[in-house]
Image 1 (tube, rainbow, N blue to C red):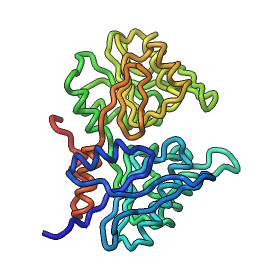
Image 2: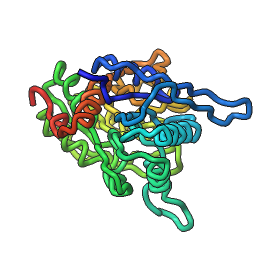
Image 3: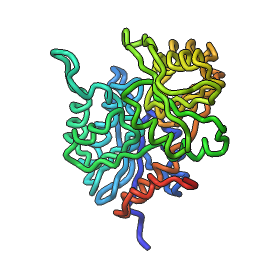
Image 4: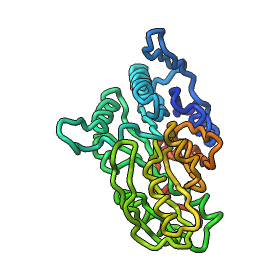
Amino acid sequence: MGESRLKIFTGNSNRPLAEAICRSIGEPLGEATVTSFPDGESCIKINENVRGHDVFIIQSTCPPTNHNLVELLIMIDAARRASAQRITAVLPFYGYARQDRKDQPRVPITAKLVANLLVSAGANRILTMDLHSQQIQGFFDIPVDHLFASPVFFEHLAKSRPENFVVCSPDVGGMKMAAAYADALGAGLALVAKKRKSATNVEAINVVGDVEGCDVLLVDDITETAGTITAAAKIIRSHGARSVRAAVSHCILNEVAVERLKSGVIDELITTDSTPINTHGLPIKVLSIAPLLGQAIQRINSNESVTGLFRVKGF
């Protein structure tokens, strides 16, 4: 057999995840120089021959968001100019996803702008996970493989499923996700009605559904300040919940979030390694999405369906 036509590279946003993905599928991580010039400009060179290869570039656009995004764009451009046959941008976390519509006058739709930039740079395909809103797939005129972290969460949660288990959405927008979790886990369903006061402050108003004496699992796609999930946890506890855990696909915890989580209102925060996580000694369980993304890369490379990755063992 000849040389594998698969090549995997990574930027600096989440190198441990890229290395874990490569280990999971037995492929080497491609050699590339990804540094910065003294003035802060990204300095990138692919140190391997990629002519005619199927290239995957792994990069989460997490903080520093703009730097990581530009790094990804430059890597795609470098691969395109080196005559790669196909370039797939792998974004375990797609930054700017919350700016997906005009909710005020004279604001941008930055999620669409990022999509345009990725395509203009030379991406032929996108592989991402748990987009903030499904319609972002429609911002691309190239194929988008959209994975979900839920199979990874289900496998973990199935090991310790409480009797009085209720899945709760911390806002109306997450009801579809919460319903899918409740269905898969055979749990009850609840909803917290909230009112956002600012980018960092949220007020929980009411709980729809019965949580008294129950073990509650809050589910969300992203948290930065932990405002939504801690406000939801407080009102759920005031309604008599026995315990409150949270399952969040992408955690970008800042100092405000760490202080809120230190209050102990959430017994455990379960998340993935889509972005680098510093647990700060808090009860945070990090599940790896490397095998899931690794399988997706293998299937895309061999032109197989990725639909099978949505099926969950034991459910």
